[in-house]
Length: 285
Figure 1 (cartoon, rainbow, N blue to C red):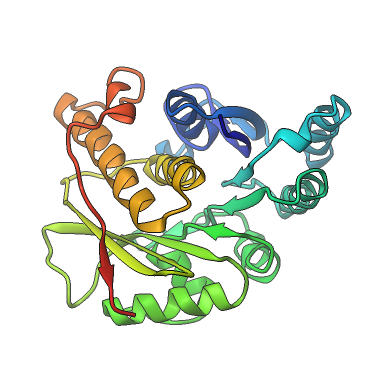
Figure 2 (cartoon, rainbow, N blue to C red):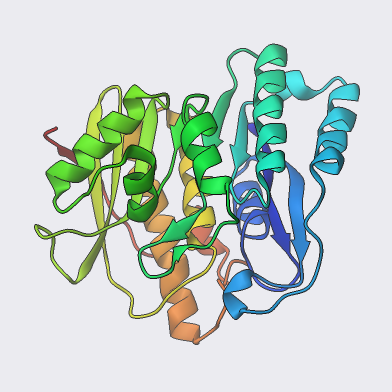
């Protein structure tokens, strides 16, 4: 059984950050030790929320307490997402270094949550730059969406070839594996959504039908599921196909129910046996 420390936001109502990642990881057979960066009433997409940003020192104290139990050597991966503040980002990097000290084979999977094409930047000032200038060089796996990939690399991505070039440029600066979510482009059909994964052994693409609505927390779910399957297989293409199958099945169920939040509990069987199956195809890079 793989073990993951997940440092992310938490919401009481709905699913985002750790509230979107922890249960699916557990349902996938991963032991998860969640550490929270914020404790909000709901995700910020509602436009109003209550609850605190957790101070960086408090986040660090939680990690210190885990380490004092002498168990960090059991950790296979550190997963991080929404940071809250750049100071929390520094705690995450310190945690990555500490976990690697305890287990040199552990990997650092970073989802650079900062913005999207339809919203621009929604992360607090300083966080996008922190991702670009400090996290990229330390991560083993990164899962940006197209907007985030363009910011991190300073490249535009009009075609699949552009996305592959940007992903390789990001890999050259640190992460061994880059998964680009929500890929669109001039050479892609409007009725499919694509994910592209690039690693040392090449590039893969998986396509799923477009669902006519927006989802919050789907990126957090995507990263968690990719990490779970990559830890099991160490195969980018296989992990990408499994991730697309799970995420699309959950999103389809959420759409069919007309529910505003991901149906992670009601449709949890889709996490272990998704109703829809997709296979990643190798791309020529």
